[in-house]
Length: 341
Image (cartoon, rainbow, N blue to C red; front, side, top):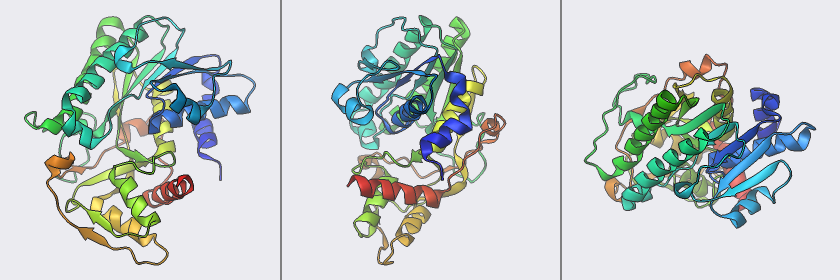
């Protein structure tokens, strides 16, 4: 089987990017580093190169992940909230920098909003002074709020977000950033496209990541019971990291300006409890149990119970499809985290 990076290259035909300069913000995050590594892998295998710029805050951390700069790979070292507009000859941008910790949404809501709004405005201003041909903003399924049925959710679906709840700082700031992107597209003709990702995981997840998929994987690795802090009734689709990367590159290269695209593996739609049972079943000794010990969701920053059944019909019309199912995604996540540990 091809490795993930070669799969991304072949699926998206990244030959189209040779000679172009691609900037990735949030480059050391899970999605960002998958995108950067796939581009660097392309350069390693091909004579014609893609010029890659990774926007990072911590150079030492970035060098541990990607290595030192080369003739076709450079770092832009800055906090996204302090990014200055300068013409670096950038042709394509993926804005992946974002707060992702649910606990931080509750503990630092003002900072969560500031990172989203200020960071996005800065990168849009940066795009205005560069010869940008395509700009992808990574948004979230959470912009749809908390759907309560299993109906398919298309890109025109409304929202029921409660703006009086502190945790709403995250999805509401994502919605504002989407509209900010559209505003720049309308007023300054920036070629902006939006990708609304479902929860994404795979190789590259930090062993101590606090999100539910990482907690489940750690329990499997350490042969501990999986303890749910909610009843696990929330249902959503999931997505493997390489599939997220192919979707982003697909929209970057083929998407329409001013449009938003849902991205998920529709076949993975299940409840958190069902996913916990799936992980427990991967234990060879079959000794892991799923235990429910409900806690106050407001303290931990958990989203309210929801049914997020995303439709991906729109992006599939661009030729994209998910390739890795939920069980295989979890298996690869566990292998990756085991090797790291």
